[in-house]
Amino acid sequence: MDRQPYLDRYSGTSTVPTETKSPITTIQPEDTPSQTPWYNPRGWSLGTKLIASTIVIVTTLAAILIPVEIIQSKYPNYTPLNYTLADTYSGPTFFDQFTYFTDEDPTKGFVVYVNKSMARHLNLTYAAENSAILRVDASTPNARSGRNSVRVESRNTYDSGLFVFEIIHTPFGCATWPALWLTDGHNWPGNGEIDVLETTNLGSHGNEISIHTTKGCKMDVKRKQTGQRIFTNCDNVTNGNSGCGVIGDEYTYGEVMNNHGGGIYVLELRDAGIRAWFFPAGAVPVDITEGNPDPSRWGIALADFPSTDCDIAAHFRNLSIVINIDLCGELAAQKQYYDTLYRCPATCSGFVASNPGSFVDAYWEFRSFKVYRAS
Image (cartoon, rainbow, N blue to C red; front, side):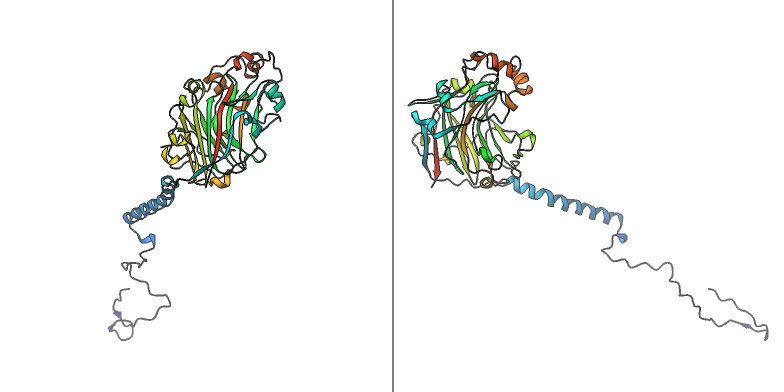
């Protein structure tokens, strides 16, 4: 406040009054800057704020994406194992090592699974020195309650191993749903499922190799395979229990495979992962034919399910080898397959009931199964 001189009313002289203390706190000058700490965003310029925001975004994305990239680039060490023969399924006793499933089909197929004596009586299972056959009834003229067929499950169970399936003929035809697979039927899906061969109807689009598990097994990771992957979440409650599938080409199943003399499928089940190879007749590695199989020599597998994001040992155990030919059911009768893809006639169940002659090619023929254990 400016102090202006005024006349002393008593003396008539000009004086400047003495300043008195004010009870009000002295106000700081307006041009004095506030001292904001450097780490307080309120004091940052617009450019500084933009730089800081960019750093935060980049750091956050790195924290999310780098672990994903690490998982996707990882791959298990498939160290070569020394395999020795443990079990052989072949010759006239082939089916003696299996039990015959006779319950109602759990997948709602238009099929009646018969017992061992009925299967032999109807010639639906037959084993000789050089091959074993499992077929669908192709003679009953009107199967109103479902057509007779067979489902067998091995008495021996497996947690790991190398499985060599020598196949002469695969089943095909409208309404068929054949499969060669491994599972624990009493503890499904807890102990997992591995479908080595599976397709529906004419099967002309190739074989599908797949695995089905409970929660916690995914295949959105680095894989080394020649087949085309489908889904990557193997949990049975996702994608309609499609599992994690891999599709082979037309030579891997059905009439095309049969016309080329069949071939050998090999499944390797180990803690590092699950792999499957297909070798057409005439192109089987020598080490397999000589009984000393060595997967490290075979090149890239048809299907690869590594343990990167799936604990294989925890998800697959106590597995039996299962062979069956279902009819219609939850998969083969689906419109997208039965009608759209393969253009099969009538309704699925109606076709099965009234056309026995259409199932003459609906049979499996095997030369042998051999199971090797790592030693």
